[in-house]
Length: 196
Ligand SMILES: Nc1nc2c(ncn2[C@@H]2O[C@H](COP(=O)(O)OP(=O)(O)OP(=O)(O)O)[C@@H](O)[C@H]2O)c(=O)[nH]1
Ligand SMILES: [Mg+2]
Image (cartoon, rainbow, N blue to C red):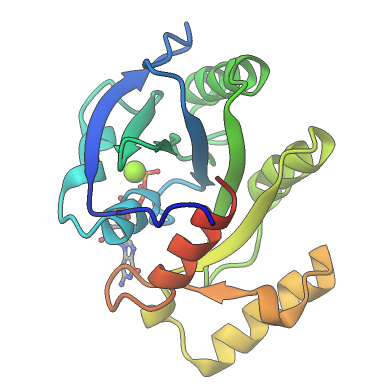
């Protein structure tokens, strides 16, 4: 049996730019994707039981970098920049697209991607582009809802139906997380552990 990962053992290692100067040693990577503001950094903080660890992306200039967090000296959690700037900021979108294209081409260590969706919002064109890209490239991934503390029962039911209808996802595979009240966080740790 694989060893149990200690998610509390976490270090920020480095930010990787479009030149893909990966950290060493090379280890398996779990990538977090999602629209800007969906809660990527917050869920990484929740998974690792930290308050402020993953907000390095909020520093100026860090918005188009991949942030690498080493977990238990075993693998990296990779916090990607948020997408969804395309309409507002063409330049940002170009940088994001270049960064991710290079990443998907050059990282031979990506094991699994987690695409975060806000429980209160419908998937939009940006989400669909990202998800279609993962499917096309045969990158295994899972769709995970964030901010479940803000959604009521009706919104969760609607969100469930949405994923069942659009992506044929079985009901029992749908996970609701919240960085605020911690629900779903242990499930997410187990999902990550199972893909290492
Ligand atoms: N109520 C609630 N708020 C949350 C949750 N997760 C994140 N937030 C809030 O949503 C906002 C965005 O969270 P971030 O974690 O910075 O989102 P992000 O996806 O990393 O954003 P970018 O790095 O800009 O792409 C912050 O104000 C968080 O406090 C949650 O589970 N519940
Ligand atoms: Mg962030």
